[in-house]
Each structure stands twice: as structure tokens, then as C-alpha cells.
Image 1 (cartoon, rainbow, N blue to C red):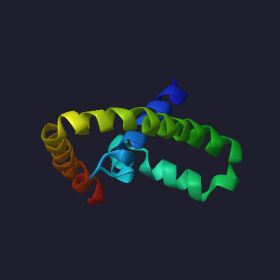
Image 2: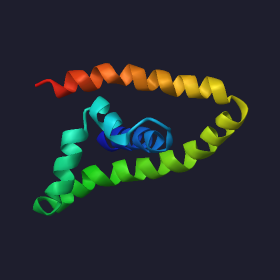
Image 3: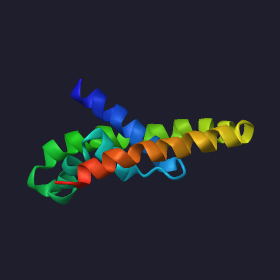
Image 4: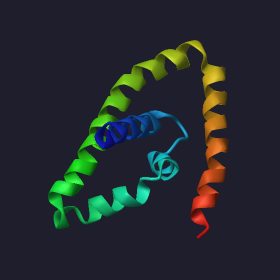
Length: 105
């Protein structure tokens, strides 16, 4: 179950990588995996197996998200440019609160 959840997180991060104005890092913060992700990358060789088991499903999900959603995004932008642009603008505005909340320790 843990690996499936990380694949789903990766898919969301991959989608965020190709959406204009949305940062994959912001999505990592919203999903609550940013610190673990950074720690796993920085200290990769201290626990290779554990870090690989965390990072591989996320990387797989990112690849799936980029390849699958890229075609969907192209179709949406070609047919519904204004609606899609305002939707993404709303996503950006909606995520500001979470980032401000996370940045205040």
C-alpha cells in the first residue's frame, strides 16, 4: 500500500512538472513528502535500500504522470484554452495558503 501511495504521489508530482505555474516542489510540500524526499536524496548512500524503496516508486510515478498527462494537457489546451488557464490559476491561488502555513515554524 505504501508503494502504491508513493506512485500516486509521483504521478501528481509529474503532472505538476508539466502544468504551467505549478511547481513539483510545491506539490511535494502539499503532499507532505518534501522533507523525506530531500533527506532521501541527500543521504542516499547511508541507507541505499531504504532510500531506493522510497524514491523508485515516486520516480516511476513521475514518469507515468509526465507521459500520460502531457497528451491530455495538450488536448485540453487546444480545445479549452481559457477554461484550462483559469483552472490552473485557481490551483496556484489555492496552494498559496498551504505554503505560507508550512513556511511558518
